[in-house]
Amino acid sequence: MLALTWNVRGLGKAEKRRKVRNVVISLKPTVFFRQESKLGVFESRTIRSLGGILLTRGDFNTVLSALERKCGDFNNWSARAFNNFILKAKMMDIPLRGVNYTWSNNKENGTWARLDRFLVSPILLIWFLNMEQTGLPRTISDHSTLTLGSSKDYWGPRPFKFNNEWLEDK
Image (cartoon, rainbow, N blue to C red; front, side, top):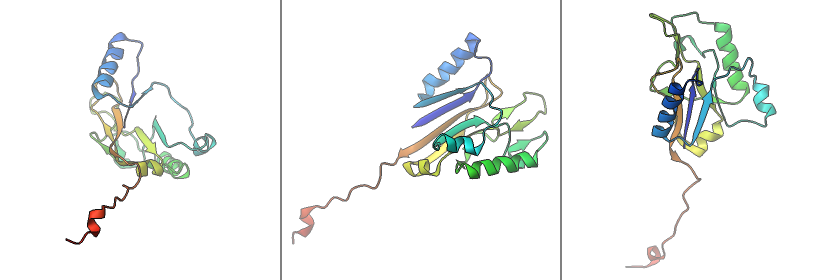
């Protein structure tokens, strides 16, 4: 399984659509999330009201800790609220590989932050062993492309096979 998500502004331009298509073709994701809109408030009760979500991805416009921001202002209240949201929604933020930050304001000595992420239900980590999210270098967007993948699917314990030869005395 490979999920690809990318927050790209300006997909009305043919050049950007072509570049996005090329990335999708080269990575061959199982699922591709294209995100260009903003959701004002996304509360844990929203997730619960939908019957529980195994996977959500977003540009949450906040960070979990000061370590996820380089330059710019860190909002401790917002980080605490986001951490509480993840706990109440019973989701997990799995480590990000590839890049430290998923967004930049594209200015010299600018602000960098990890605003984008996948949040997963713990049950997914049982079904898909070694799940990891990876940020790819930014190209045409101020946001990094994110992938979510698992190197090995888990379909339950391997069945035990008994070999009758084991009973033979040789």
